[in-house]
Structure formats: structure tokens, C-alpha cells
Image (tube, rainbow, N blue to C red; front, top):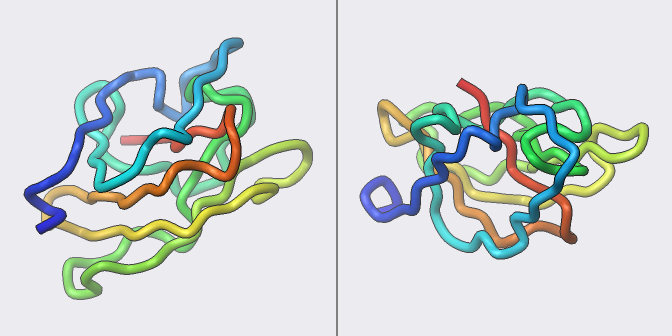
Length: 119
């Protein structure tokens, strides 16, 4: 179901390499999402530097992406703030749909936190 019913996140300012001085917030993201187009193909999987991907506190997937055989899994998203790569965190669901991944978000712990992407 989630591999065919999702919303796309396509903005290039989501990439972990995008340096910014302005901040957006992903507290409104609820449901299944896929990174596509200029946003890249998947969520970042290593501690993303602060003030990247249009966020003050950058979100990255801890624990890696699942295989197709793993099915729908729970993973922790860490948000880099201050001196900690995991100052805030939120559990999400992730599914490998074969040639892409989808992520089930339920907002963020607070504002100025954003889910960051990579290729």
C-alpha cells in the first residue's frame, strides 16, 4: 500500500549538501513520503552538519535502510543540534519498495527540524 500511495518531496533544498541561512520546519509532514527529483533518492544516513537542507537542526536516518525482505521497519531519525548528532529524535517507519524507499513521518519533535536527503 505505502509503495503506491505516498507524497513526493522534490525540493533541492532538502539535500544534506544544501547550505542555508534560512530555516524550514517539517512538523506538518504526516504520512508516507518519497524523496525524488532534485531532493535526491533517500534520506541521509549519517550525521548531517547543522544549518544544511534548509534547517537549523538536520534530520538523518540512524540504523540504515531496510532490504525488500525486511518489510516495513521502525528506524530512529536523529536531529543534529548543538554538539550532539542526536539531540532530538523521532521514530519513523521505512519500507524498501524495490527501486526506492518510502518513509512514514509524524511531524518533528519541534520546529526548525527537517528531514534531510541525499542521492
